Image (cartoon, rainbow, N blue to C red; front, side, top):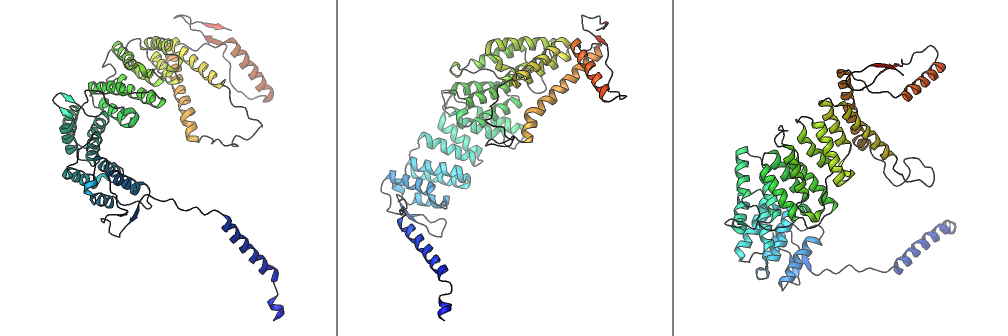
Length: 469
C-alpha cells in the first residue's frame, strides 16, 4: 500500500503546481467589469410584446436614446415589431425624431410591411412632420413598392403649382423605381411623365455623393429609352448639385457624361458633330468649381459621333490633337488610338492608320520604361505581402488590349493588300533577317525556315514600284 501510494509523486506534484500557478495568475489579472448600459431591458417570448425598460424613459431624448440603444447595442438584434410596440408604449414622448429612427431602421431591415404600420401610427399621433420625416415617409413607400402612394405623397408635400421642392435624391429614387419597373412601355412612359413633374426647380442636395449608382443608372436608362432632353436636364442639375470634387465624383461624372455625348443606339448620325462638340465643352464647364476634364472614355464617346461621316479618320485625329493640347495627354489611350485607326482603315487612309499604330507602339514603350520598385534582395515573384494578380485580371488588363490591337492590325494589312500597298520594310530589318537566316542554316543545315523577299513595295504616292534594297 505504501508503494502504491507513492508510485508517481512527481507527476502529482507537477500537476498540482501548474493548477496553482494558473489560479494565482488569474487572481493577479485585473477583472474588467462589463460596460454599464444606459437602460436595462427585459424581453418576453412574445415577438409583439414591448421591451420593459428599467428605468423607464421620462423625456423625449431618453426615448430616442433607448430606441438607438435597442437597435445598435443588443445581441441578438431585437425584432422590428417589438421596437414598434416599445415606441407605442410611450405615446406622450413620441417626436418626429423617434419616428425617424424607426422609419430609417425599417427601411434597412424590413420595409414591407412595417413602414406602412409606422406611417399610419405617425399620422394618427398628430406629430408634426419635419423635412426628414417627409423624406423617410416617401422613401418608405418607394422601398415597399407602392409607387402610387409615394408619388401622391410627394405631390402633396413638395409640389406647389409650377414650383417643385422635391429633394433631388428622392426624385432620383422615384424615377429609378419607375424606369426599372416591370410594366409595359406605355405604362412606364406615362409614369415617367408624371414623375418628371416632380423635377426640382430650386437648389437641391448632392445625389452623386449619396447614391452615385442610382444617378448613373437613371441617365443611362433615360438615354437608352430615347428621353435625351430629360437626360440632359437631369445631368445639368446633377452637376449643379455637386458641392465638392473628389476622384469618385469626377469618375462618376465622366461616366454619366458618356451617355449624353455618345450617339443614340443605331443612330450614329443623329446629331451633327459640331453640336456634340459644343455640348461636350459646355458640360465640362457647367460647374467650373469641379475642374472636370475628359478622360479617354469620354473622348471615345465624342469620337463615336463621327462613325458615319466622310473623312472621319482625319476629323477624329484633329479632334484628338485639339483635346490633347487643351486638356493634356490623359485624354488619349489605346482605345482612342484604336478607334482612330479603325476610322482611317475604313476610309482607306493607310498612312494615318500607320501613324496611330506607331503612336501605340511608342506609348507601350513609355509604359514599359516606368520605374519599378527595386527589391532589396532577389526573391521569387510570389514572395512578399502583395497579392499576385489573378489570371482573369491579367487577361482583362493585357489580353483584351493585345487582342483588339491585333484585330485592328490585321484589318490594316488586309486593306493594304486590297489596295496593292505593303508596309515599308526598313533595310536594317532585312539585315537582321539575313543574319538570323544564316544562324539558322548553321545550326540546322538543310532545314528551310523562311524566304527573305528582296523586293519591297514602297508607298510613294500612287505608283508603287519594286526596288531592290
